[in-house]
Length: 158
Image (tube, rainbow, N blue to C red; front, side, top):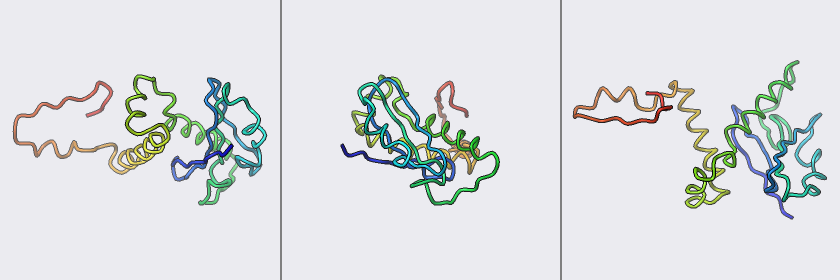
């Protein structure tokens, strides 16, 4: 079976990962000692029951295909990698969305493209947030000259 690796941006890193299977049991595989997806987890990728398990295997920042840049190894590098793994899983996984939320987008974009496109959109929003504290258009509101009704979500800051 052919497995397709992909990349997502987490902080300054282009993280290489592989997601296989469609089972309800999710497994995040973290390589050790300069390990990669294939050096450390080939038997699991090829041997797990992928109807029961969904495996997400990554090359941590600075390892394998998650380079460049090269990685430094300060005393807390494992903690930093754990933080990156957390962010990687938290913001990029559209499978954590409810079916009601996900299905209309899958219908439009397709499952594979939606995951990639969502990741790119998040990268753009992170850039906006980091460059201007999340301000997309508030500075332009003063320029509106006609009566305007601004409607926004309960959790959307304005």
